[in-house]
Length: 280
Image (cartoon, rainbow, N blue to C red; front, side):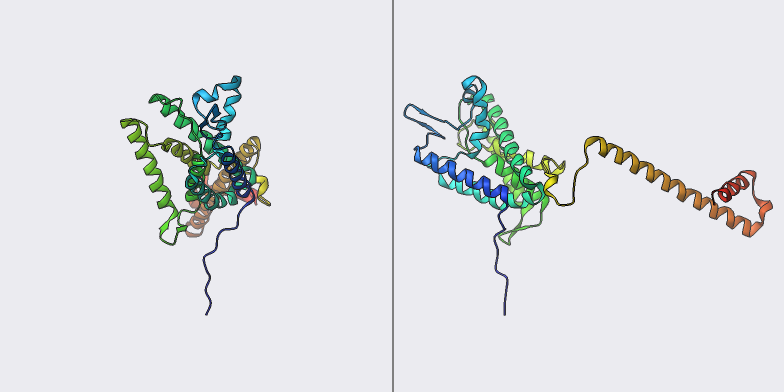
């Protein structure tokens, strides 16, 4: 008797590098006693992002939209671990389609979208100065992308992936609604999750970020070539439709000739038959 035991997915290159980079930043933040993610003594929030922090350094602070995505509180390892688990499982599903560079682009885009949505809603509630950290926005982008790509993949052999993603996104929507209605105070940036989720859905729906050079034998045409190919395809469909219509018309006329003779044909039918003969 033999059976296949559950197997972890093979880690893909981009996800491996993202996991390593997140782990390095987490370790450095721990060594610096949290200065990358929080305020300590005379400094801190080095990698965090907020409206105020982005305005630092004559615009250089905008780089925090990237750095915050790799930064987690060293005092909350479970947040870091949870994000890395999602990144590992969902990211490997996404990278099979996106390729190496496309996976990195989705990570960054999901994180940036999550930050901007969160910062906009936080500012509207008077919390523009609250710093944001974590890879949750990017992870939600991968979660939704993977759920769209393999919706029936089973999670723990209990629930299909699309159900898990739908529940988590619903929680994010409801929690954001509660924050807008009652005030921000949970410490969890639910709106950042939604921003990442929206990018993940859009990326799958519109084939965004796909690194076509990573797919052997498959290349995406440029815009002009794609437009010309589409025009030629339409022309070919029209030609085939016309050919089919002529063939059907010819069959009708020949059947009429067989049943009633040539004299029964109208002048229009005679011309059609003559043109068909010339076409061979």
